[in-house]
Length: 199
Length: 65
Image (cartoon, rainbow over all chains, first blue to last red; front, side, top):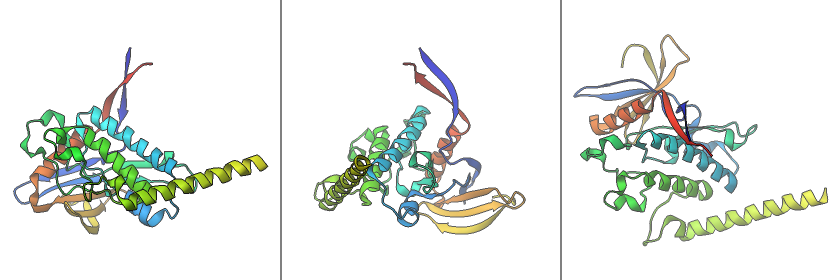
């Protein structure tokens, strides 16, 4: 049996006011707490995120997007500047971080499927391969690929892009960075294990 | 924008202008004013519709084990 329950979507910008006329279109949104993920990683969080933490953050994003999809909306605009994060990293784990998605200007609303203005902007931070396939621009997998791109960026700190027909993770600099990170993780885990054995 | 807000900071965004604002009477109310570039009605209407759809309570369907 399926269970239905009521919930808030707390991880989305909250609308306060809006207006549009032939001169101006504007909206007022509640200010999301914290900093953009880009600013947080580049300027505030001075340590490197561990691979496990990057995965946990991506899992949180996955849950948020799943809820948004359940309302018939595909976000299609994932990038580090569009995710706000509030995280007291000195006291809590990354699973306690509050994430808020901002900027829904690329959203695809399933009930508007005939709207001709639904094309995905070429200005997006990450263009998944399926974005160039007819019909796939209006598919939930655009967001799934976006989460993979965020995970890739969290681990490597490299913006995902295509060069010489190579996918982002196949680029030499990305491969080196991922190898470095894995070696570092293995060393940390080995040290932890040895210390535990000595105790 | 009504007279209830005052601008605290201007930010030039990719999609248009963004201003950080706060309530004139409710000083603790912090908000963001987003003005769409070239009066881009397409982005405005998409964002508005998505945010309106996601506002408030939603029904979640969970499969029981």
